[in-house]
Figure 1: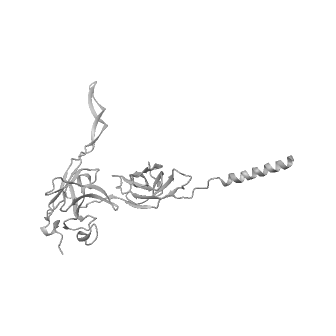
Figure 2: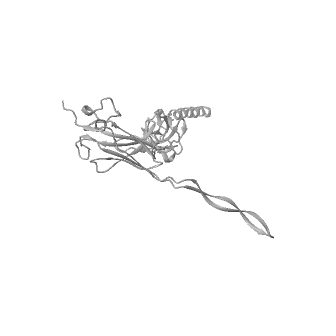
Figure 3: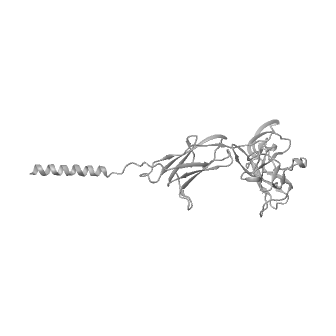
Length: 316
């Protein structure tokens, strides 16, 4: 009887063991989504935010050319404002070298029971380098052109596509001023926020000058300002030549000095003999001379037919 009971108990344990194995949770099989956007930056000047958008909560590690970006490892996601249901994590990327870069990201979900880790598709970007103007005849040399801003459709859509350089605009289009230049006092350094204190475009009929903003545009960096035209409130609507002036002010740089040890010979008479002694003393010398701030301006002096002009939309 004992032998029969022992066999019954063993069988019960075996069945219990089977039940336990069958009840164990299966491995996570759902892969969350993660996409990258942003990353437009100017080398050594202005950082560019990289945003990862995920389908669930977790942490994101950002990389550039396969190397983890400093300060961007394990960045926690935050929920997007309703009604959106996704999550985002942001990395402030400050590259030091211009050129093409492959941005990547790895996502680790908070819920590792139901979700696996995920890898974002590579986001190929170009780190901007400041455009340089070759003519250095003046302390500040400037290059300015005007292009059509994007977003215009229908009758006011650009004829040759977006970003075309032109001097002919239609009421309703956006005039984008593009500016770059160099500072001869700084050995031809390109004009960037490192050496510019202010930059703006003054347009006749517009009360407030348009601030020029420095940024990366497809791998090259320069200054831009947008003049929106149209018949609505606050829009520029004066037909004919657009009279404008670009003004750039550079930062005054103080002289760099340092204290050095110098020597001088001192003659003295000792026992009716002239004795020369070398005495050491400290003095401050200029290592790099001061560079005063300068102002550069540009106003078009082309013939009227070649100057930026705003026209009415043709009627059909």
